[in-house]
Length: 317
Image (cartoon, rainbow, N blue to C red; front, side, top):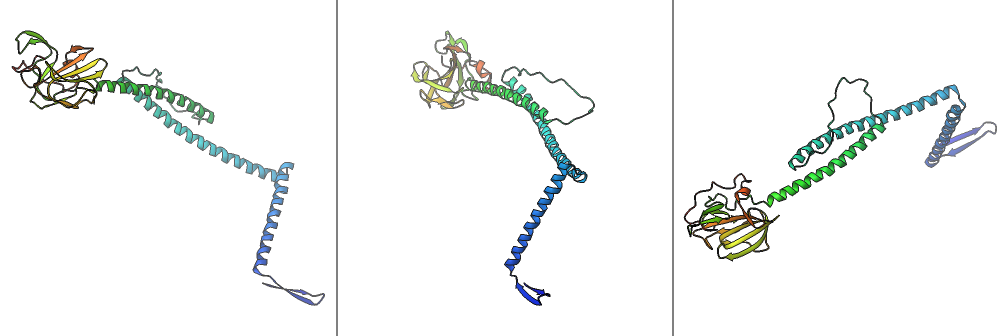
């Protein structure tokens, strides 16, 4: 860029050449000067005018400040209203949690948690007001306390249900030979070998040799041996002084110390020991005293068939 400067008084002309760099520096300098001038004008006019009470400037400053405060209040109110809505959702979910706790506590055999039910309420909505931040915080604190109490209670319910589940798995309610008819039941009968009246301490299941014998419940094998009267014998301890006995097997699939599950195959039906034919002699003992196995098997919907009259091949045990 070329500039020509003419001095009429001296009758002299001077040419100045400006490059792009010079123009850029000049523009930057001009911008800085204008920025400082604007800042100084704002400081002198607005701030000084506001402090000294200039009518027009003071009104303008108050208007700007009021608008800023109104925007902040509107923003805070919108956020508080949103929090109040979420708080209502949390309260509704807590009510659902309480209803669930009441239902499962009945299943666990526990009393319903001692909470007072809120009385019914209703009516026309008049003078509704939004919650304040302090009110929302207070309700949140109450919710957290109720949540901790309900969590502790449901943990207790879970523990009780788990205990009941484990106990049910350790009760001999699984038929040891599913689908097989019963011969001799529990109680006094005529011994098939001597014809004399004798106590029968278990149930006899009629089945073909090799038919799987299943564990009536989970537990540990505490005895696996050949007994002169019981033949190939397996005894399973289920805890709580409860034991099941499986006799006259042709083959045993477990050994002492094994952990067995409910329904696991532990032996096969046979006619070993004091027996007149293939069958399973099944006993349930509590503290070493024989119990009627039907009392336990009756807890299972398909536990056993109707007890039939003694067959000629039934064993004593």
